[in-house]
Length: 209
Image 1 (tube, one colour):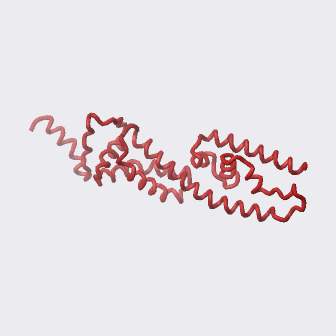
Image 2 (cartoon, rainbow, N blue to C red):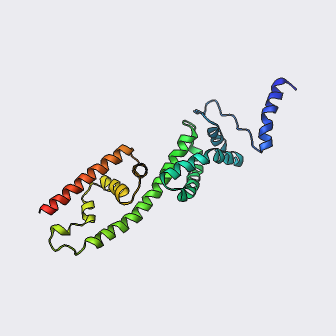
Image 3 (cartoon, rainbow, N blue to C red):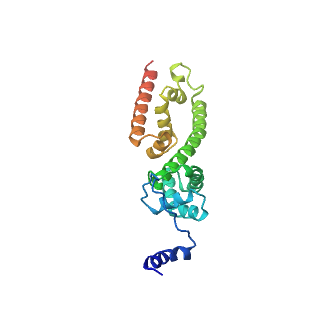
């Protein structure tokens, strides 16, 4: 047995003991930039290798869960992490390794959280709107006083209204709101500040009428 053969055999022993298959070599013409083992597992998993798929999940799951839990909550993180991997495996055939799989996977996780938060927002916003209308309806005999919270919110530009509702009424953090609207956190802060200024101006104008 040659020295090269002994080296290859020695390197493959730990993989055999762990029940893992060696990662197949990447073709020379493949436009890849492999930066971590998870990316190698993802590339191997593209062909449907169940061992590579399991290793891909095992090496990335903890980070994905922490990221998801930071955007939503720990009680929902398990389900959304699972949904992230379902989406990732559906999209895996298109992954070419131009970036690390970590970047690619966290992007999927962010979109999964954003979709979830949008659903929550729609459900809560309906309840908020109905509650606001119930509290303001019929309490003011004069036209100016009948401008309720829901009407004031309706006057805002859609992006400012959504940012304001997300952070001020529903209690989401600026980071969570940024994930929902898919914009930088600074944009959310700006939208909320402008929405607040417009609401104050509208209330002052209504009271002065």
